[in-house]
Image 1 (cartoon, one colour):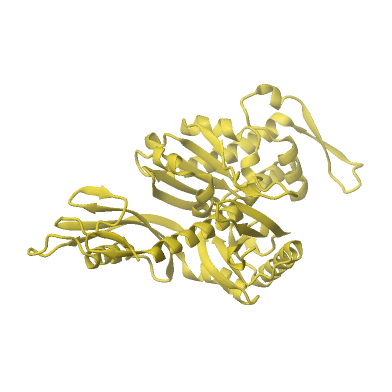
Image 2 (spheres, rainbow, N blue to C red):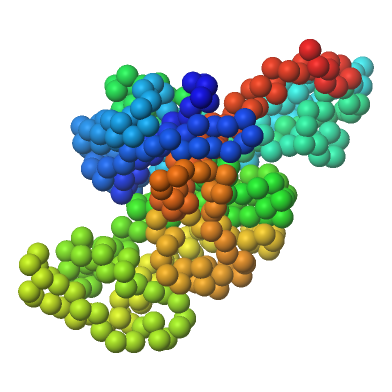
Length: 401
């Protein structure tokens, strides 16, 4: 296998730190070579709160990944999340001089520069500048309008930014382990690279990633990114709610959430009692009403989904014609699909990684979504670089070198 085809993804998540190694094939498929994962320590709501602990977690995940695939890891694509990350659309207009009729590269460059310069608070850092489209005298174009006739060209971008120090802390952890950061990617944007195909984006699709400590989302309308963001609430908050309600330890609350929780409208799923051991020996037992457990989960999950729904741009919900795509470990909650469809009025799907394969493990599990997305992001980035190298911009369009 070619060394430059090896892509490594790193997710420093609230629940787990994961490192995934993949061989990106020329046909667009990816073979997973191995991974390393360790329970997180020092991460709260997707952000580092105890750096030494996080450093050790990343170090351990790297050792496991290298042992699993016999590849020395020297660089990674790093995902970031947290409530400090936000996205906004921004436009850059460039009006041609009176004597000019034809759009040149310098006009597009000026429009692009203005579009990218979204004003962000001091201490914040740009994470992504994503081209949405160009506009020439009121008409939209998906590709560069160089060579076209017009009086004004406008570049439309989606800009993603966050607090610089919180992003840099994750990068510092990687570099202190003698690895380079190939790129930093906002988690839901990475996941969307494989979960949402072109037809889905064209019809309008919303990806919601519900992790342990955060819920991230990205919205695509008419094939373009429209909005994205993050909320500091996720699956661990549901577990904590159960722990508070039942007086069970967090570990046991997590266990019954996964094994017994069901928030569907089927009343048969909320009948009876659940017996749970309250000590390590399993001698002392506690009974919990199944109906009460499901209601605790339903209330918090409804809150999470409502946060996303309320954050969408005005009128956007009516334009989501494809539907909602769910990912993240907490998305496995039984009955969540039904609840999501009820709240949004859209069809609900699961993020699928059919082009990722491995003979030993099923990487379609939602907990791998971010890492799989990072590898796809890396693969597509390579493809874009190769395409750019083959073409140069000429006054009347593109000419192959």
